[in-house]
Picture 1 (cartoon, rainbow, N blue to C red):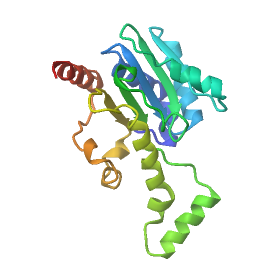
Picture 2: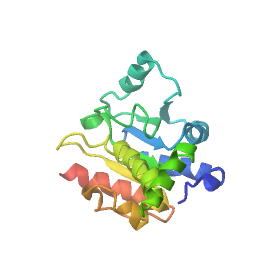
Picture 3: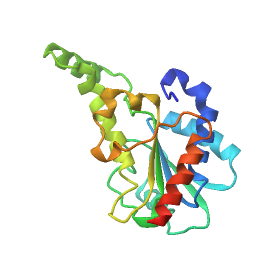
Length: 211
């Protein structure tokens, strides 16, 4: 699927349903990361209207320390309900937090994390282009994929942790993005049909429970 800016409104409801498909196979705690607050808030609104069986909470734009602690406190050890947290890539919850074991069962990353164009990024782009290098890589792609990897890295914190990472954007299949992924992410499955997400996650948990 595409999460490009021009396609977001049209694909918003479909994305919300795909996120639900990814988490309904196993009770537990999950996080979904977005490239912007605007996009996150749009999907959050749809998701909370459509799915009442999920306990949902969201990162806010200016969270105080107490709010941050409450957010993290929602990831309690439990196996009797579905809990889903909405957050932004590159924010306070995409790095520096440890949700070990059953405190986090899966992470969904929506989009490749590209920043909006700005004068500063344009200058970086032009600088590296003048050096004969790929300006887009240095201005946008490298920092974007770093945010993606930080977000995905929340789910596996110890050798015994079990959980999945779901990358939702067709650009992740582009060789230029795949080349920047960790080696551990090379064993992946491409999901394209409507039931692929549900079937993949069910199979993953079936195998995980055996080991």
